[in-house]
Each structure stands twice: as C-alpha cells, then as structure tokens.
Image (tube, rainbow, N blue to C red; front, side, top):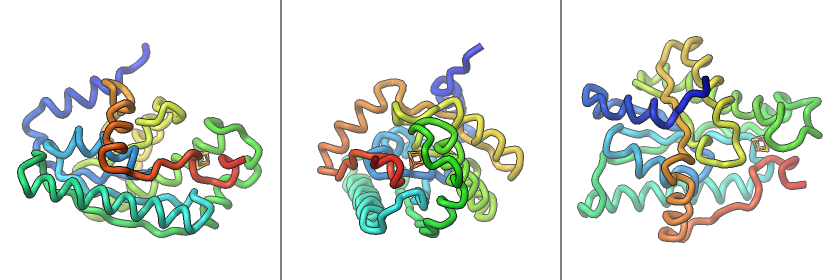
Amino acid sequence: MNRNYAKELDKIIENQGNKGKKLFLHSCCAPCSSYVMEYLCSFFRITVFYYNPNITEQEEYIKRADEQKRLIAAFNRQMESGERKGYPIEVVEGNYDKELFFEKVKGLEHCKEGGERCFLCYEMRLLETARRAKEKDFDYFTTTLTISPLKNAVKLNEIGERLAEEYQIPFLPSDFKKKNGYKRSIELSKEHALYRQDYCGCVFSRR
Ligand code: SF4
C-alpha cells in the first residue's frame, strides 16, 4: 500500500508533545525551503542545514547559499515584528566538497535526472544531515527535497528512514509538494524576490 507521507507528518505535528522539538532541516535552496519553513516553524525549532556539494559551479553555490541566508533573516524579522508566528530559525552551512559528489556518482554521469545518480546524491546529503543531527543532539532530521515535483519522494523517505536506523535519530517523513506546498513555495519566492534557478545543481543536470 502506498504511504501518505504528508499525512504521517501531520500526525507528528498534531502530537503536542512534539512541539518545540529541535529539527535539523537539510535545504537545497531558498525557494524550496520557503514553504517548508513556513509550514514547520510554528511547531519545531528549526536549524536549516545548507549542504549541497552537488552544485558544480562555486558561483552558483554561493548565490543559492546567500539567498538561503537572506530568506531566513527575512523570516526571523517577520517573527520579531509579529507578522509571522514561529520559533526563530537558525542556519548552518556544510562543507562544500564538490569532489565528494563526483566520487559518489562516478559511472552514473549519463543517467537521466531522477534516476540512480540522483538517489546517490540524495543519500550523500541526507547522510551528512543525519550524522550532524545526531552529533548535535537534534530530535529530528529531514529535507526540503520532497517539495520538488522532479524529486522522488518515496526514495527520499526510504533513504531518510534507513539513515534514521543507522544513526539512531528520528527522520521526519514528508511530501512537501502536497497540500499545495509547491504552489506556495512559488508564491513565497515571488514575495521575497528569490533567485529561482532553472536547473537542479550538478553539471549533468545543466546539459
Ligand atoms: S540532477 Fe540534482 S539530484 Fe540529480 S545528481 Fe544532479 S544535483 Fe543531484
């Protein structure tokens, strides 16, 4: 039977005992994180983890990182002024080690986007997220990646749950594109005049 990850997440959120718990949220970029932060920030204390060694060009990597920080600062200002309800959001940047990505996907350079190469790319980013979340004593970890219609949410949740077992830290199931999440991320991107890239990140996705 197909699982409904969005409903599973709602159940976790409805449990008031979870309110205020610490979430380590991997983010690929500001536009994808916009809706996810809006949705979760009144429930979890979020630290956004910008960790994307899959982005081939350094200039592009920096541009996306800067947009991520700018959006978080804007959210925090809105919270301070009372315009938005929620816990203040923190941000941490991971290592930008492009070689790690290229090593991981060696031999899969010609795969189509959405195939085996991407699964390894998801795993690379989620593994570091789980490892750091455990190290820093977070209550949950997850990723914004399920908001994209181009990403495989089932695979992402499978990987997250496997790493949760391995690192002994709960993974928050998600399918953020549901409940109009993707649509809302486009609205928020417009509202904050965010840079929205037109390719995923690696050199292969640019072809
Ligand atoms: S297309 Fe995107 S998800 Fe797939 S390998 Fe490239 S950067 Fe990673």
